[in-house]
Length: 257
Image 1 (cartoon, rainbow, N blue to C red):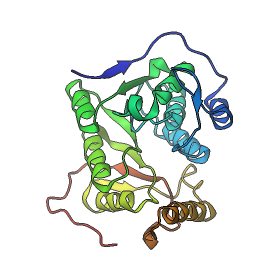
Image 2 (image 1 turned 30 degrees about the horizontal axis):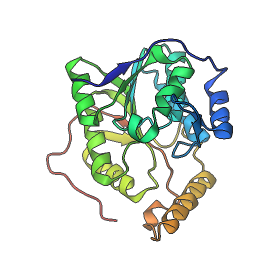
Image 3 (image 1 turned 180 degrees about the vertical axis):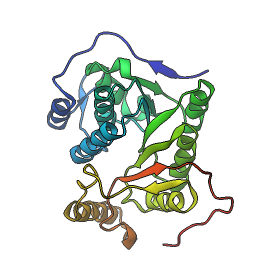
């Protein structure tokens, strides 16, 4: 049985998603059971704004996201979606209740965003199979789930099943070596082209910001007692791709690091 939640009910209206993020950063993420938890493991405000700008430019009718967490990226994506007349944001997070105490779901509910989102508390493959069965198609996707190479790759392949030709997919945490490996695989084998330069919302990731992201990645690695691959130093956290008509390569190739 599907574990999809279509949300409705009373909401606590906040002035804007920007104000909500500031409140979460200062006071923590409110939880449905009461109390709050410190905001962590969320996209930066800069990247959240970039995601909203991309949605405004792509103008999708429907979008999807792998990994809800505390809901920061979702609320900015939905904010952009509703501004361009989009109707639904499909969010996949099998661990929303277990690992995040339903904080992301509660955040979206408090913002009054219930009419625009649908939560699937299933694995990506199971959720996408449900979407395919119901004829769901999307024009924008954001992948920020598990960061192991195999799981990122599985998320990419699953999202490809419902992403329209001409649609855009954004991957987060590409300064992680494992995620970057999956990105390289996508570039070499999938019908996708990078669109990381040349448009207004993409120029936000300037060299100084890439270098800052690289230093943050280096700091994370050193705290874990390991030295990262040099391919991640200075790499932008977000990578953007547009899907072209065509198919995946029959003979898959990998990039050596």
